[in-house]
Image 1 (cartoon, rainbow, N blue to C red):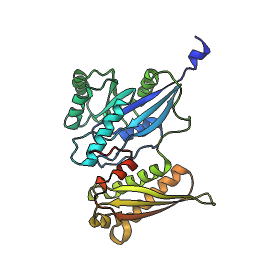
Image 2 (image 1 turned 180 degrees about the vertical axis):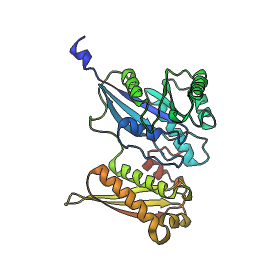
Image 3 (image 1 turned 180 degrees about the horizontal axis):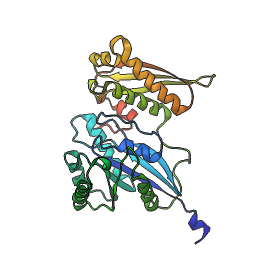
Image 4 (image 1 turned 90 degrees about the horizontal axis):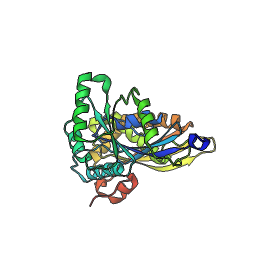
Length: 303
């Protein structure tokens, strides 16, 4: 074996697809080793394809965290689902994540039907295996593999990391040989201004959860590096109605203060610098029908 063979690098794209709240964002954060995608209990939190980059041996694995796939009812829903399938078709490997507790039903059942038409190499990931009996896991794996020609099946826990090292080994061995796409120290392709907006949106949903429709949108409008090494960040939370604005602000401004504090603390830790975060809430009626907002989110506006 030549030294050239020993040091050959591999790189490629792995699309993580699945139903809403299957654990895709938790898994990509686990595989990358740091937070690149927001995680909440609210469905359809991830809206566009977010790339997280992991180095494993001589391989650079670019994970695509896609929006959850579900039956679309509104324009935004349709754009998200279209984006998810687009991410799958652009990848070298497609990894279907199924919540083993929920099993194969509803959206997961429909995804299996549609996945048969995807030509790329496909693998099956059964998540939350620590909460399910072994015989149930084997039955799920058997049913899924009868319906789709998966190359491999992995039993994992996105939360604890169980099984994830074997998964990384598999990706590293099966991605094509070639140069790396990103610098070694880059963990995401998400611009820092957008990542900051995503972090605030996460805190918004975690604080309000059922009270606020998931159509709320956050934009970073100002980013100013200051001479003392700190950064001033101004963001706008857009909602569609005055009643939603009142929810975000909360009684005597308590809700918006809590959201801002949580976002500021995480941003400061992430950037390793002091962050002065200022949040504003504005009503933008029917923003989910505005093509410009879709472009801002990296989504194609559905006609």
